[in-house]
Image (cartoon, rainbow, N blue to C red; front, side):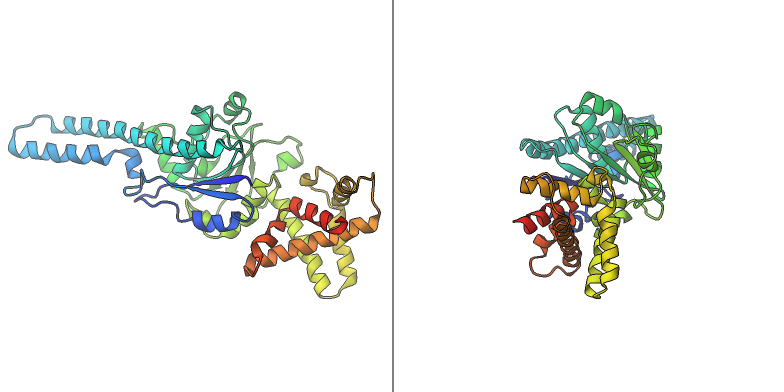
Length: 378
């Protein structure tokens, strides 16, 4: 089972990823979830990314004492020196957090599988630095939220240098997010280095980076233009820095299919077809059920390699049976098993009844197809 690493960010005053557990409950039936936590910014949060309090505070106290008891000239100059030293020390703190992340990654990469990643805020900076500066870090699909990487992050150069550095990147762009904007201003003031506001405005568009208008909208450049890109900005207008984690349903509808290399819009349409067929079956409406099954059977998606679901099923049936083609009734039986399993998986996801973790695996269309073929021909 492939792993998904979740890497939290840091709040203004600390905190360590309360979103990771709810997201893990969504992903766990399908992936081996690994929560990466680091305590380097736990107490002072983003402030300790800018200045090192263990350097700055003692320096201020020392200056105050010397000013009270001794004649110290140029106090402001000494304060600026202390501030500069604390900024340098803050970079060492970031390096310690990065080393912790690399250590956690290396333990997973040693198994030979490139894990998926969900990173938030400071976690996106750790992931970006690891990809750019460390040749041993190879990842699969990456979700970035509240991203504080610069908009001109060199995705193309990273993949040219390491073809297996990453497969696809989904950058959730929250247009009300102030944290990336503050990180960008801190970079401009030379307080922070290598930070930016990609989580607010997206990465610079081009042949390597496309932009979609909403989470459930297909990329027009990929679908109509025929030019796929490994990096996509996904515009989310109504969210702020952390509110994208408000409901695990967001991960279920958008991040799960992304990790399966399925377009979320196509995935949502597939689920709707299956739920509609199940509803017509429950209502004993044979005419509407036949229409729903025909729509499902002859729909074409990119995850079926551009062919209809009927041709996709027939291909797996032929492989399973060892014959060039199978009769239409067999494909119809497989199709019915598919939408029944998918509908049951949707119900299991919401109800969490007995055996729900096994049923919910059918939410993956590929698993549903293979399981249906095995069940009908087994």
